[in-house]
Amino acid sequence: MRLFSPAQALSALSLLSGTVVRQQVDALTLDPNSPDSIKDVSSKIAKQLVAQYATIDDKGVHVIGGYPGVLYPPYYWWQAGAMFGTLLDYWHYTGDDQYNDMVREGMIHQFGEHLDLMPSNQSKNEGNDDQVFWAFSMIAAAEYGFPDPPSDQPGWLAMTQSVFNQFVARYNKEVADGNCGGGMRWQIYQWLNGWTYKNTASNGGLFHLGARLAMYTKNDTYAKWAEKAFDWMSESPLLTADGQVNDGTSMTTNPPCKDADQTQWTYNYGIMIAGAAYMYNYTNGAEKWKTALTNFLDKSGRFFPDQFNGVMYEICEPRALCDADQESFKAYLARWLGVCIQMAPYTHDIIMPRLQKSAVAAAQTCSGASPHGGGDYQCGTRWYQTGFDGIGGVGPQMTALNIISVLNVDRVPPPYSNSTGGTSAGNPGLGNGNDEDRLPVFQNDITTADKAGAAIITIILVVLTVLGAWWIVS
Ligand SMILES: *[C@@H]1O[C@H](CO)[C@@H](O)[C@H](O)[C@H]1NC(C)=O
Ligand SMILES: *[C@@H]1O[C@H](CO)[C@@H](O)[C@H](O)[C@H]1NC(C)=O
Ligand SMILES: *[C@@H]1O[C@H](CO)[C@@H](O)[C@H](O)[C@H]1NC(C)=O
Ligand SMILES: *[C@@H]1O[C@H](CO)[C@@H](O)[C@H](O)[C@H]1NC(C)=O
Image (cartoon, protein in one colour):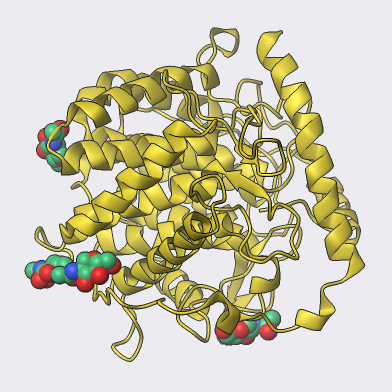
């Protein structure tokens, strides 16, 4: 994940200005206790989301971005992977399967030449966090019993194992090189800025994937790795003992990995909450995971402040500073709070009121006109305000869809494992191999613009750390 280049920023700006409401449509009114209302409101929002990915004509699927599985700028490759996860959730929670073929096609299309979720024409900018967001959707497909790819392709489980194996190899290299005693770097390739940053999305990603693979396969090796990733994070500045989840830690301090960027993002909490909930369930309620989960949930209360009547918000929203990545983050906290209820039922009464209040507030923002002619019900970013706030696009649509559809969590089966009905084909050895063999195309093409884009992010990170600290205090 990163900020976009100046050219993309310009096109983003023009997109955004196109999003500013010219006419409003009726707001959606959600009854959070009614399955029919949840389904109806979700389907209207899903239609608008899909319209921003693809227009479906009579010749089949025509994708706006030109290729199955990608969104147009300013959305990076990772966000399409995350969006398929949102659409899988939509199907799982409402039963509406009308987009399933499109989702399946998009997911299979990005497996990559080496079946590693590093397609050579995307991987130039790919970080561990980008890759893991695709893997999250792969394992969700396995857990929901989504039809596996054709038999000449790996199953959803195998693709998740592929990413897990790549992460383990990268982690082991960090240990061998003595870099902060382990941990995942943000980036896979050193030409990207952020190569010297160890972030929560990547490390939490290993933890979270390991926990879900353990749950699905009952292969304890995955659980051991999940615990190892978690323990490393607990000893690093990424996690505090009382459950605060920081964004990342720099390797360029003395000593390396000394301080944390303490900006509080919803999605980092979502990744950790789900990982802890799966481990809690996998271990049949071990105290270690119960404590971790309870603490993360407790601290995540900060995203549902009284000031906004308990409605979920992202720290960049009040000043409208969220970038296209950040506009989607709430989707992941919403999604994984739902899974948490299933894996750790004792959390139900803490979580459900938060989800319900936020979902009702999200629905009433979905009165924007479509930026792409795909119907109405564009949702906004600031759920705590009345009506559409003028900031639409894929991210806000995903967040609303996730938080509304997940309200049906008590009415659907928990994620399948391969002993409770999951049938996705696995391959525990997929993805073994060398990152040098996965070099992207256009490698000579890493432009100054890319590097400049990456430099900007570092600067923004520093600014955000300072601002973030200030926001939290004030
Ligand atoms: C990217 O590569 C995939 C194969 O992995 C291919 O299907 C797709 O069409 C390519 N897209 C572009 C933009 O080259
Ligand atoms: C589930 O996965 C494990 C580990 O891959 C395997 O040993 C086991 O045979 C699988 N069980 C079924 C029912 O497929
Ligand atoms: C694990 O998840 C299942 C399915 O939701 C649930 O019935 C069970 O109570 C959970 N285990 C624990 C220890 O909470
Ligand atoms: C369990 O997972 C590990 C790590 O990927 C793998 O090496 C091993 O073969 C797996 N065992 C089974 C029975 O699938």
